[in-house]
Amino acid sequence: MSKRTDSNLYTILFAIAMVLVVGTLLAFTASSLKGKIDENKRFEKQQNILYAMGVNNNDEKSIEFISTDIVEEEFNKYIKKQYVIEGTKATENPEAYLIDIKKEAALAKDPSYTRKLPLFIGEKDGEEFYIIPMRGKGLWDAVWGFIALDKDLVVKGVFFDHKGETPGLGANINQRFFMDDFTGEHIVDGTTFKGITISKSNADPKNDDKTDYEVDAIAGATITGDGVSAMIKKDLRMYMPYLQTLKN
Image (cartoon, rainbow, N blue to C red):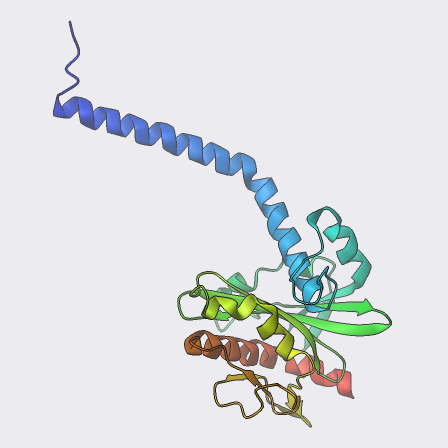
């Protein structure tokens, strides 16, 4: 008896079978690659942390991370300590870099939960760096980054990235001409936290004044810039009780 391949029942059963087969293959592939995906995410985070403190392969204009085949070794070389800050308590934890700050922010919506804040202490050429992860919202989706400070709470470097900002506009937050402007900026005035504002009306477009708490905005990326400003102020403020102890 010949099959009725032109019937509606055949089409429906065929579609269901294909969904099951493709779904099973995708689930198997995702499961088998999970270890590699997690490893790549870990390497990327280590590259970003090192980049913020100036451990990278940059030339005059490029953005070049430490290569993945040596990044773990370099991370262990330059990052001397890792802390988890919970309230006023800072506990040394060699795996603090594995903390997911997005999940921590979600958990902290429960007022009974004490948020875990990872802090990385690096050392390069005899200088100490305090590197803080940040996460916020741009125009279209998430923005995130790392900021490296010295003990006087002066910015030594940053790294920013995004999930879906507009190419050529907000997406430029991960370009050198923008990120390099942050180096040397102060975040406190005496004991008063000021943060850093991405300003369209910055009267210092060459960013010569490092105590004005402002860097020049990217043209056409006002909302993304506002998101980066808000992210810096929101996340750095949480670390201030610990950071202020560095100046005492």
